[in-house]
Structure formats: structure tokens, C-alpha cells
Image (cartoon, rainbow, N blue to C red; front, side, top):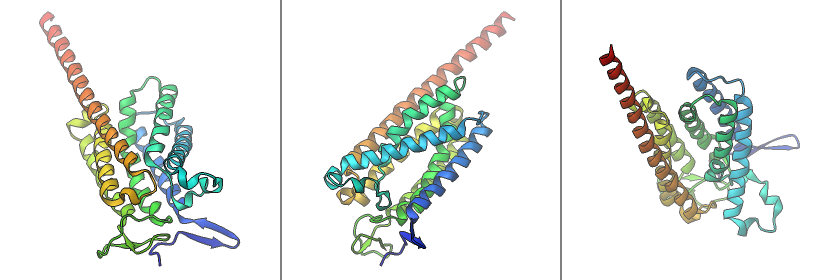
Length: 268
């Protein structure tokens, strides 16, 4: 018997807890992102449209990536394509689809603002929403657990035999800790470097996601394990490149400013 319900009925209708959990997490992330952008000085008039476009792109990309990496299961069964309550939203598919949409719309609706600063305001809120989403989403879906385990922390999930490693809970706690790290980082020296907070999030989340896939899920998952690990490592590597680039760029800007002030002082 599963420790967590996956659905409930109201009259003739069946509601899936998985979807409600993701909707709650998305709404919390939206409110938190809006608040952070406002505090950072951004005009949030178009943020509702921006968020809607990102959610649609992310859902399409996440589902498409999951179907593509598990084509043997979905081929010839079109009805399964829409059965998202059984799980099947590939994180990196959603990121790959939403990222270019976010960049294009940021340039369109906030053309005179820094993309790096915009990302730094958004990313901690997205990580917080992701943490909540892991606890309220996959935790309540069919086949939501990881490897078989006989340890005390094992949990029974619908569609899986035996006790499983509670991966959604573990990942929710990991992402919650990362959120706290990002809040700490933006209050330190890294917070003065545009894009640095986003880069740290990419590095840490990518490495942890790769380890989770390798150690907790592996080939038992239905999301293309090797592909997930590679994508996670690519994300982490991109974060390293971004961090180095932004730190160097920030240092060069500070040196130019110092030279200008020094020159003005000498002239005066």
C-alpha cells in the first residue's frame, strides 16, 4: 500500500494530487519571483504573461523530452502521452524549452535591464518553487520512488514493488538547502557580481542532480538516466564558465572605474 495518495474522487471526477502539487509550487514560485523582481527594481507589469509563456514552454519541453527518451513505452500509445499523472516530466527538457523563451521575452519586455541581474532575482525563487514542487509533485505520483531499499527510510509508492528510496523528499530537501545557500551568497561578495548567483545555482544543482540520478535512480528511472546525468554535468560546466566570465568582467569594470576616478583626481 502506498504511503501517499495519488488521486481522489469528487463524484464522477478524478483529481490527481500530482497536478495539484505542481500547481501550488508554480504559484508560490510566481509570487516569490514577482516579489524579488519588484525589490530588485524591475517593472513587473508584464510578469504574468512572462510566467505563463515559461510554464507552457517548460511543460511542453519536459513532456516531449520524457516521451522521446522513453519512446519504446510511448510508441503506438498516443493516450499515454497525456497521462502526466503517472509522472513523466523531464526536468532538462523543461529547462531547454523555457530558457530561450525566457531570454527572448526578457529582451522584449525589459530591454533596458540586465539579463544577469534579472536571472539573479529569479533563480532563487525558482529553486524554492522547485523544492516545494518535489515535495508536492512527484511524491504523489505513480512510480515516484527510487531504488529498492530495506532501510528504515524506505517508502511504498503506487506502481512500485517494495519500499523505495524517497527521492522526491530527498531532492526537495536538497533544493531547499540550495535556496538557503543562494540567499547567503547574494548577501556576500558574489551578490555584487551580476550573474554569479545564477551560476552558483547551475553548478550546485547540476552536480547534485547528476549524483541523484546516478546513486538514487539510475537505470530504474523512466527518464533516460545517462542523458539526465550528461545534461546535469553540462549545466554545471556552463555554470562554471558563466561564473568565471562574470567575475572577470566585474573585476575589469571595477578596474576601469578605479582608473577613471584616479585620473579625475589627478586632473583636479
